[in-house]
Amino acid sequence: MTAHIETAELHGQPVLKLQTPDGAVALISLFGAQVLSWVPAGGEDRLYLSPDAVFDGATPIRGGVPLCFPQFAGRGPLPKHGFARTRLWEVSNTRAGKDFALATLRLADDEASRALWPHAFSAEMSVSISGDRLDLELEVDNTGTTPFSFTAALHTYLKVREVEHLRIEGLRGLDYCDSADGDAIKKETGVGVSIDAEVDRIYHNAPPTLLVREDSRAMGIHSQNFPDVVVWNPWEDKCAALADMPADGFRRMLCVEAAAVREPVELAPGASWWGRQSLVAM
Ligand SMILES: O=P(O)(O)OC[C@H]1O[C@H](O)[C@H](O)[C@@H](O)[C@@H]1O
Image (cartoon, rainbow, N blue to C red; front, side, top):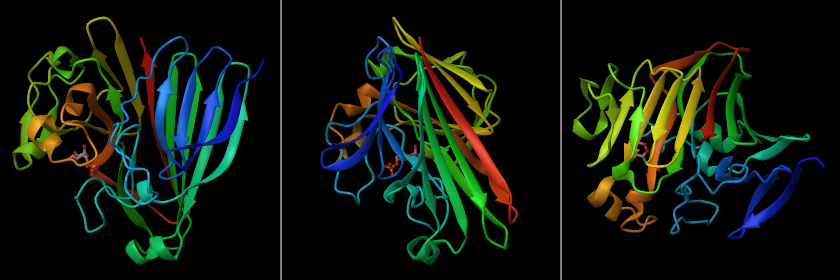
C-alpha cells in the first residue's frame, strides 16, 4: 500500500488531502498554501484551526500554518503578513511513497503581486507527512534581474489542551523583541516559558530544536535556516477582538512560528533561499 493524495473541498475551498497507510493525514488549502490540519499516525489533530475561521477565498484563514511572505506582520508597507496567505497557489508536484506523502505548491509573481511588491519571484511550499512528522519547507527564488529582500514566517498554530498548562523549552538566554510591549528588547530568563497573559515575541538566534511540553504529550519543533522564532498567544482581550476566533479559542492554541524577521533575507538575481520547520508529535 502506498500513500494517497487527492483533491477535495473544505468549506467550499479547494484542498489537497495527504494520507499515509499508517494513518497520518494532512489537509492543505490551495488558498495560501496553508496546512489546515495534521493528524500524525495513530494520533489526533495537532494543529489548531479556529471553528470560526472564514473560508471565503479572500480572508486569511485563522489557524493551521499560514505562510507570511514577503512581509512578517505589519513590519513594512505591505498588507499584514504579506500577500502569500491570500493568494491561490497551484499544485506543482505530488509524490506518494510507502510511508510518506508530499505535495509542493507554487506561487509566482503576476500583475497583482507586482502592484504591491515589484519583484519577480517564485515561491514553493512543500508539505510532507510521515508517521509522527510534519515537514514544511518554503523556497523562494529571485527570478528577476534586480535584488530584493523579504521577511517570512511559517505561522504554526499548535493545538493545545490548555495553554496555561504547557511549557516551551529551549528559549532560555535568548534576546527577544516584545511586540506586546512596544518592541522592547528583553532577555528570556525562564527555563521553560509558560503562558498566562498575552505573549507576542520575536526571539532571535533561536536554537534548531524547541519542545512544547504538555501534561501528557509534547511537540518537538525543529527549524533550519529560520533564525527567529515568534511565540504568540493573544490571550483573553485580544482574542475577544478577533472576529474569527471563539472567546475561549486562545486557550486551545499556541503559535510557535519559524521566522526570518530581524534580518530580512536578501536575494540576488538568480539566487534562492529555503527555510524549514518540522514538527514531531510525541
Ligand atoms: O491576525 P493575524 O493577521 O493573522 O496576525 C496574528 C499574529 O501574527 C503574529 O504572531 C504577530 O506576531 C502578531 O502580532 C499577530 O497578531
